[in-house]
Length: 260
Ligand SMILES: C[S@@+](CC[C@H](N)C(=O)[O-])C[C@H]1O[C@@H](n2cnc3c(N)ncnc32)[C@H](O)[C@@H]1O
Image 1 (cartoon, protein in one colour):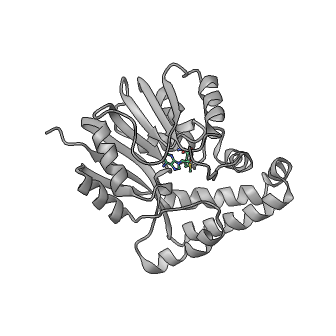
Image 2 (cartoon, rainbow, N blue to C red):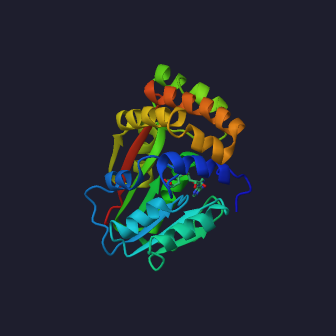
């Protein structure tokens, strides 16, 4: 298990207030719907890489009727919260969570129909190795579908990320859409595509900023204290600037494992 905790309780509290219980990333179940748009998950066995506090895995089981969702994450403190959310959502029989070590997965070859991930791959340094593992675990014809926070490949836009990266406590291994697409193709995926979500998140992020500075301010201070609130407000301003300038580009990714 990773000892390097990036998602302590007080951070989770803040993220749940702006993104909803069970979500450590923006958009909630609606964004999960966008990520899996056009895919029929009913009866499918799905791996969710980076389950966080369980929201996406719950949505896959409850709203998209996956037969089984296996979630992995590396931060053991997330397990209890995610499990409680899974229990509360009534999908305990379908969602199975595991805390794992970063790196290769302990799952058999061809054991998943779909590998899903929401905004977690940003924390994983070796994307080529990850994509090789994902294609190994997918059955032929299986689909990798994810969203991830990527950086612009335009140098000027990218530099807008510097300020945010300096003040955020999170460890980001940012790639561009082109780098992700070519790493997926190199791993053997076909039909590789990416869908930029910067415009969607820019609108949402500005709204979040207004909430944090307005209606949610007192609730946030009551929950985490004035000092953490003030520091976070600063980080969030950096995030909003990076998104508005086009440096940070949430993106949906897909690839299919060839059948032969
Ligand atoms: C931004 S959160 C997203 C969580 C969840 N997918 C969501 O959308 O609410 C990123 C998650 O990735 C997890 N993570 C970091 N490194 C990981 C790794 N190597 N394998 C699996 N999960 C990882 C973190 O612990 C965290 O839960």
